[in-house]
Image (cartoon, rainbow, N blue to C red; front, side, top):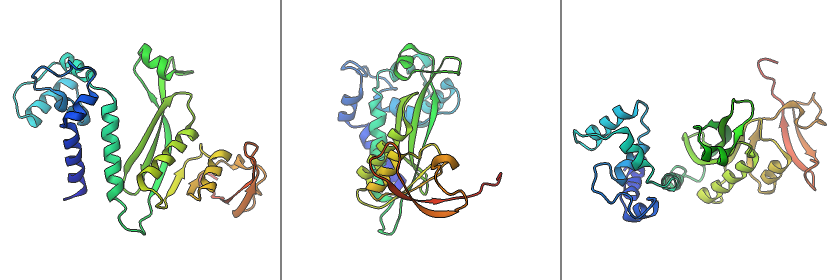
Length: 258
């Protein structure tokens, strides 16, 4: 059986289980009426990630996936969607990550390479979202969240996703990703790749103390005492935020624009 088939079977079993249903509906009266768009079909439709308009994709979903000539209105679907807790999708994501982590690196010499990166996510205008995530200044009162992902660059799989208010800290979110890696693969060695926004004394200390392999792109002024004429050297540096100096390797790479 292929890994994809294993994953789909695992998710299908979870979605159709009574425990999952009971845990993830908003009330005991939710989804008690007999309807084509019940709990499991609604979850599957949301996971389907339709790219076109809601009415046309609902019609296609009913016809192609449920094999019926009926459909439902946009309003009916919206009501159904509100009856499902968001934790349901977090649970499915966790189950996917756990299964994939058990099967992607079977050989001892396979070396996982993870990239950590953050971005801002614009959200719909709604008072509850504004209260939870905040309004980003300079965006015309746009509600935004800060998101961060842990991505396996070799297998093109996202293994963890963090979401915080817009003024959250990407480096703290990166530490959450690292803890997730340890949960998924245990003591297996791995390489972490970061973009230029991540270098900091605290994060470097975490990498060093735990003997993690890492590669960080950093701006020229990151370590001001570094000899700018040296292209490859080991550096021992004392950051103001740390009690002890740490040692790391600095490699200077000239970009195409100089």
